[in-house]
Length: 126
Image (cartoon, helix red, strand yellow):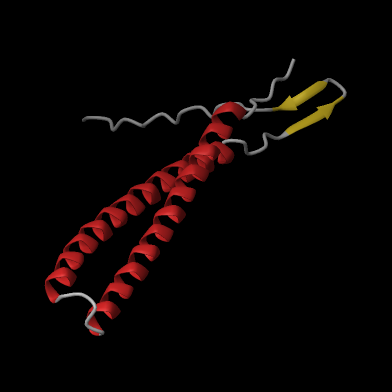
């Protein structure tokens, strides 16, 4: 009886879910970063119009930069996770390349036959 290797669907689904989660986290952190930038822009305008002091703006600059670095780090981390999950999905799918079979009067021929390892020729010593 001929048997075809099937894709591990559970692993595929788990990896796909991981890819989706990482992508969503990248998007969420980017939105958070945009909100932070908009908030800081508003504070800059408040300083420009004399509503807050330079000392208050300097404090805001320090906090904003720290938060931007944290968000960038999280974005890069989740991008790496997504890349890894994508690579795993790609390998799993690539392993599903069809194996050639043919039906004949004597049965089914083909399938995965491993190629024999080529022997290395030894040099003769004189």
